[in-house]
Image 1 (cartoon, rainbow over the protein chains, first blue to last red):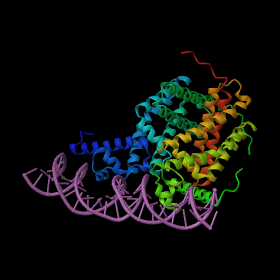
Image 2 (cartoon, rainbow over the protein chains, first blue to last red):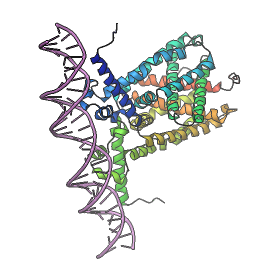
Image 3 (spheres, rainbow over the protein chains, first blue to last red):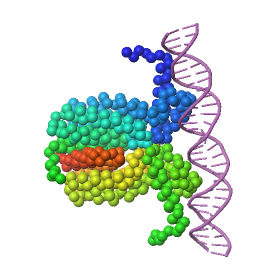
Image 4 (spheres, chains in turn red, purple, yellow, brown):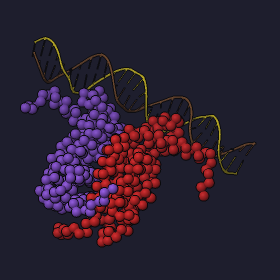
Length: 215
Length: 215
DNA sequence: AATTCCAGAGAACAGTTGTTAACTGCATGG
DNA sequence: CCATGCAGTTAACAACTGTTCTCTGGAATT
């Protein structure tokens, strides 16, 4: 279906990539709302006006970056949460997977953490939508687990959201520890693992909590 | 000791306050890294150079805002976590307290959520330090609880951090739902409460988890 | 009453920003 | 082979930025 696209489109894609990469690099030490379009084109070595051939604005570029940073992550999420292995093993693997992802794509992780609550509304919305998708997918995997017997849909989504937020927090912790000594990264691994484990324990005993009085 | 300070210092404080307030207002729709000093002084109705009488830079102003937003919050944290009431009651009260705080100081909450991972290093560091203090204080309160018998210091700090992060997430959720219909805010309250409750359950059963094999 | 101090004003600086318009050169489709 | 399309260029615009230096009016100190 997608034959090799012409020289023309190829060049365009190449410039587009260069713009995205340059922006991502510049965003290591500032927020999207202060990223100038000229700044980006200057870093790429292209005229400022060339920017408009690819993006309406830097906010538009930001939305594209969200897609790039989170769009390809859905399969990874699915397999991580799926109830193949059991308990502690799965948690260990999940934390290591997050650590690996942060080490491989630090700029992407930083961008998401920074812009999730950042000053650019369309980007915030794009991130929110992707994370909602994650939560739904995690919920779907959790539902397959026999441990979820008797759980309401609301409670499953609650737990899924808790896991997703925890993944983000963990990723952000690994990011801060990226150029710290390995001891620090091991500490982060330890804390993140225990947090997940505590949540897993809460999940196991969720059903047998005492009923509340009706208000 | 602090008698009424002279007309001079009083005026200076007043201008300083105006600068902080104007900045906070402007930060509702952008990040600190894009906030210009002229922008702030213009909003106050004062010459750009007057800014330097109060702050070295906008980053410096940001650090002051962190102090203002989080510094006065320590007593509230302490009393919320203290083991006076029990279980579900305490959680309900905590969530309501967060909701109230967000409604009373939305700009402060937005600022912290936004700049925690924002593009200005000194501000990130200031927030990190304050949150670390929170975690230590929560840990100290948790330690008083008989439920914490047999817990290691590391585990107590782990749980405290989990609670602090959860408070921030909850606050941010309430913020997003601020001008949404009340139904939405009730939904947020419900989810936040259940998250906290699940964590509390995990805490109660933390001690009786199976021991891991030595690696 | 005379002097010092200092918050804020004013003007000017070199450099930046986003956006417009009209252009050029080259790959593409007829 | 020729006409069209379109990625990227060039030039110019008004508006904006942080920072410096000099000045001023009135409170604070002596």
